[in-house]
Image (cartoon, rainbow, N blue to C red; front, side, top):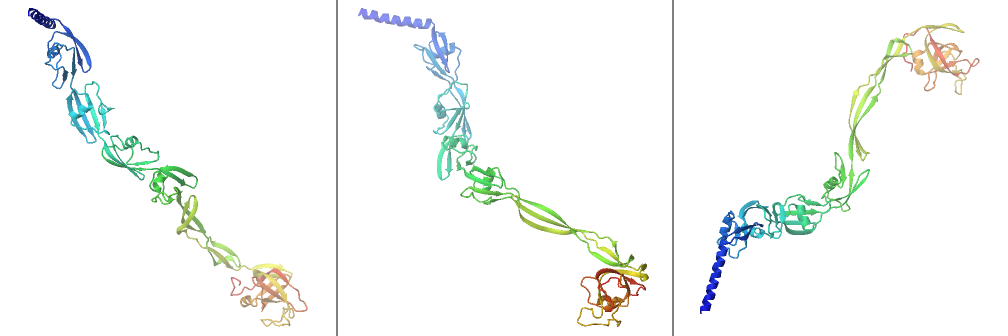
Length: 461
C-alpha cells in the first residue's frame, strides 16, 4: 500500500513539475496567417493569450484553429484565416453581392451568398477564369464575376439545336458547341453579339455564286438570301439603271449564276443645217436675162435632243426627246434683171442694134423639108417659108411674133412660124426655100434687134 502511495505521489509530482516547466519555460509556437507562417516564443497558457502576446487582433469573421479559449497544451501550430471582402457580380441579370468571409473555396463562398452554380456557368475571380469548385489563393479581396449560362436556340440549315452557354459572344458560344463557321457563312444576329439574354441564332451557310459581267466573271461563296445581297458580297452594286438577271429582289437561282448588266444613258445633241429658200424678184438694177443676189440667204439650224441607252456599252435604244428650231433660215432673194441695155455689133450684114441675146439650139427647114410626107409652103403668120422666116415654139411665138432676130451665119430673120421644138431646150427653126436650103444642127446665140417691144417677156418660157 505504501508502494502505490509512493508511485501516485511521484506521478503527481511529475505532473506538477511538468506544469511548472510549461508555465515557466518559453516554447516555440508556429502561427500561420493566410498561409504565411511566423514563430513566436511564448509561455501563454491559451490560444487567446498567445495572440495577445503576439499583438494579433482578430475580427469576428476571422477563422482560427484551435479556438481562442483552447489551452496550448500540445499545440504547436495556430491556423488563422483572416476574413476578406468578397464582391460577387452576377450576369446577365446584373446584381452585386458583398460578403466578408475567410472562406477560399468558391463553392462555400457561393453557398454563403445563396447562389447556385450550373455546370455551364462561368466564374472569373479577379478577372481570371477559374473552376467553380476551386480553392482560391490568398489575396486581399476577391472580385468574383458569375456569368450564368443562357439558353441558345440555334437553327443551322435544317437542324435545330438548343444549348446553354455562358460565353461572352455568339461566336464564342458556337465555337464551344463545336459549330464551325466558314468565312462566308452568315450568323444572325452577328457573331459579335453579346450573350446577355436567351437568344435565337440562325446560321446561313454560304453556297457557290457566279456573277457574270461583260468584262469578267466573279466566283465567290455567299450566304445571301437574294441576288442583291449576293452582289454586295461580291463587291458589286447596282447603280443607276443597272439591272441583274434575276432581279435584285429575287432569290439566288439554283445554279448560283447571276448576270449583272451595266446600263448608262447619254443625251446626244444633233444639229441639222436647214437650207434657205430662194426667191426670185424683178430688179431694175440688174441687166435683163442676168441675175444677182439682192439679199443673201442664211442657213437655219435645227437641234434634236436624243437619249441613248447603252447596256454593257452596246446601244440598245435611242429615243428622240425633242426637236426645236434654234435658228430660222433666211430666204435668199435673187433679182432677175429688167434693165434693158441696147448694144451694137458689126456683122457681115452691117451694124446691128440689139437689146437681148439668147442661147438656142438651131435647126432648119424648107417647104419640102419639114419632116413630113408632104410640102408646106405657108407659115403661121401667113408669110411663105423662105430665108428670113424663123419658127419657134408656140409659147415663144405668142410672146415674140414679129420680133426681128439676128442669127450669126444666117443673117436677119423674123419670128413668123410655129414649130414643135425640142424638149428642155430653147429652140429656133431657120427657114429656107427648097433651092437654098442649109441644114442646121447646132447651138447658136441669137440677137433680138431693136426696137424694144412694149411688152417684154422678162423670163422666157
